[in-house]
Image (cartoon, rainbow, N blue to C red; front, side, top):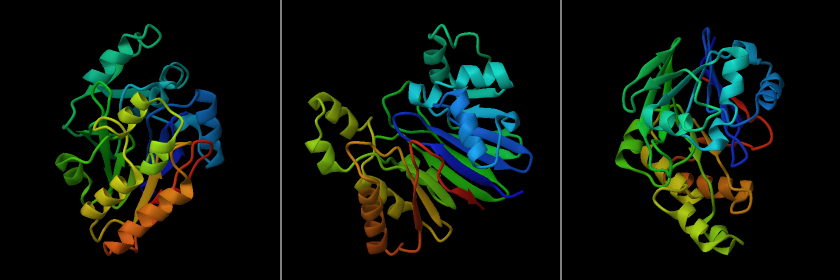
Length: 260
């Protein structure tokens, strides 16, 4: 079976990515209800019964709200680093959960999928992105990141596909009817990546092997899907990477399935 993924949900209302390879089925984040996760899996011909693990990027509720039910009903193993476990463990509802704690920067295996967690700048306890590798294909996942760093760029090189945050358009964020402090947080070094910043980072790390980029975590009021696509495609085309396919992810339905 090929190495595949599908972004089931992406946005402030919930984030969840389905990944499969060989006999392994896992989720990256679980920010939907268990019922809704099952519904979206069914929409792509999959089911919750096959999910073996959830790998958590950080402690925010739009990435974690479904964890307890997934574990209690389906016995799904839960992987997170110590900082994330500490924050979620402070929540009484999550305290009994048996975490498998990974070390940021050290790879581990879930079945035949190699998982490499790496630090990203975001306003959470110990946020990470992931490189997932199986059968020689690498997929990079960075859904919440305030700014590009050298570490992030180096980890994302040699990926065949990326799931990359393109949260906001800078002008729409500036004009949005939001408190100034919130705008500052979003645009800050620990906040979220703009369309332009995402495109520039992709252009910097793109190699011959990168074929697909899925734009994630688009803001509902500080971005537009067509604007994100236009900005990213335009910058990549100007930098000589116009052959890379740019796809959208959605808050309310699964996106396209990608396979190596």
